[in-house]
Amino acid sequence: MNFDFSDDLNQLRDQARRFLAENATSKHVRSVLEGEKPYDGALWLKMAEMGWLGAAMPEEFGGAGIGHEGLCVLAEELGRVVAPVPFTSSICLAAEAIMVAGSTAQKRSLLPGFAAGMHIGTLAWAEGMGNPREAAFSARFANGKISGEKWPVLDGGSADLAVVTAQDESGRPLLVLADLRAGGVTRTILETVDPSRPQAKLVLDNVPAEVLGAPGDGWALLQTVLDRAAVLVAFEQIGGAARCLEMATEYAQERYAFGRPIGGYQAIKHKLADVYIANELARSNAYYGAWALQTDAAELTLAAASARVSATEAYHLASKENIQTHGGMGFTWAADCHLYYRRSKLLGLAIGSASHWKNRVVAALETSNAA
Image (cartoon, helix red, strand yellow):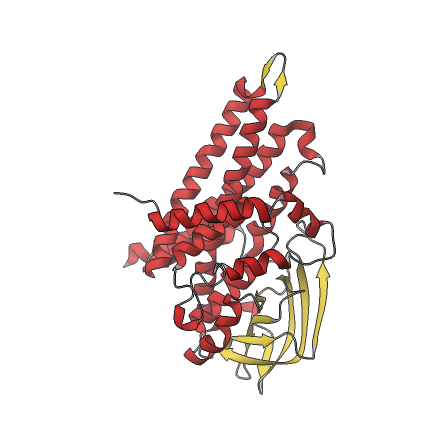
């Protein structure tokens, strides 16, 4: 059996790689990392023009109708260049939440704006450090307005819409869509390991909002959204991990020590082989996740959690060994190695830590075995 993506999706991959090679170089990443811009606006709009942002959205809601497998392909290519755009927060989290929990009217009203790059969205679930939990539904929603604090919020400084975890007047957990352009929103940019993907603290004081889904279903909806996002983020991670391995291998072939390339020494060979194995394991799990996401399979929770764990561990290993292979040069600001290490750390915690997703794997297996 052929488990690879279709020829059309592989052509999309080739097109995306050529485009990003010209429009998302490390120079573009550093302009955001070292500058005042929260993201590369020009790149974001070009991605929208090519239909990337609406790849998984149905055509009736302004999307391209390519499907989630196409979005996975694009996520991997964006991960390869550590693109400084709010892709994870806006498309993998906020837009997915609207597709999961939104009404037909909400989808028709909101999704075209996401596909066109007009909306920057985010998912505000955290209330301090820690993993996703029902206790983070403490913001209060009443009379069409929400109040509470959420942090850290990925791209919270530039988002105009946020899907927020909250509870209603009866204490039932729910998801609400808050308009961050309205009054009552205070934003504080937080210091993080990867300033090219900034995070913020949001203080909401009677901010206009509308309910997504049914009251009481908030926790279940959040888990579904995070499962779907986990697959997409896993592809972003394996894209970054693959590029780290390429960078390390290229340097090991070019750097000479004691009259021979350092790649000829077993110490380097074994390190890079370990990275290759971790990357291939992560890719296998990510492809399983892509199938489950595309088909809305019952195995989605297990597939998503497996992809999330293996991709997180692979990216961390690859980004770390990339620095080590480059030696003293790898630790410098001038080398691009740190761009990938920063992103691996950010994505490794953006939707919950590896330990949280390992617990999700165990829970999914227990449920499957009990059935």
